[in-house]
Length: 410
Image 1 (cartoon, one colour):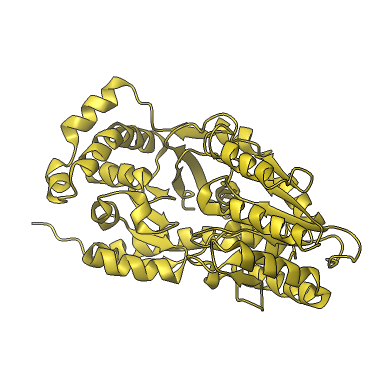
Image 2 (cartoon, rainbow, N blue to C red):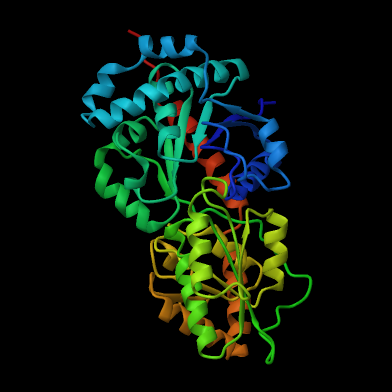
């Protein structure tokens, strides 16, 4: 009987407030017999961890970002400098290489100690560079997932992708981009595989009921507190709705990247300046279970991102049967079909956002139709188990391809 696959699973700054997708995928991998070794670049800052599974995740995570001096020196001595310099990616790439080299040496040593033969990096930033450097120095094979625009993940993309066995990208839009930008550096095996959600966990115990006349509309949003998530536009839309006589109560779940000491202050100031203290709340980082409960109580979910590669928060709301309003930005159109599985509005447009919210508040039949269609769509195509299956299939294809190449001895 073959030994179970030992897979290194590398996620930057794990576990974070938006990382429940990875935890679900890990569970799906282990349910299929894979021995998963959790790896991360560094420990997340305090204030960002609120999940009920975060303690268990941290207890089994190996962080690569703080090695002893020995791996740092070994990295400098054994680095693939010829390939790095041939990349011609400039000083920023060389700086990233110097930062990543010690972690790459730690990855090599840990992989050998744990018999890890393959590492999957859920990033095309420094995590991917660590894998590429480790592989070039005799470390484990690796693969990548691209979660957003290639430009967000730093220089040296050719070097990061060239040595990968395979890669997944979360939307067809991103696949078109990497084909154009990377050309011959793209691995032969690249597939579109969206993130997913545990659709069973978001099944409703009771059917969704549309907004009832005579009570405030319960509006819920969930996402990092960052300007690109558009929460400030949602607050501005709320002010417009209140001025027009529509009563709305808005809760926004999520925290900024500084554990509440960053963008949150500006967002709270915007909320106060609009006079929304009685109508809107910033909940901070909340657990996955609290997100689920708030979705079950919500009339409408809205996320006004300026750019969203796809959007797990949308998926969770749709899986919970909540009518969803999103922005026609990034790859969201691949998830939400306007008027069929949700509503789409232009980004950075509080007026259009207010109009979509008012439309749902006044049309219970539309709410019911979007509730049913949204959940059916996510159940059919976005279950978290699909990501696990895609990783196993990619590793299997790579192994089969190597086995098919005849060995020559000279």
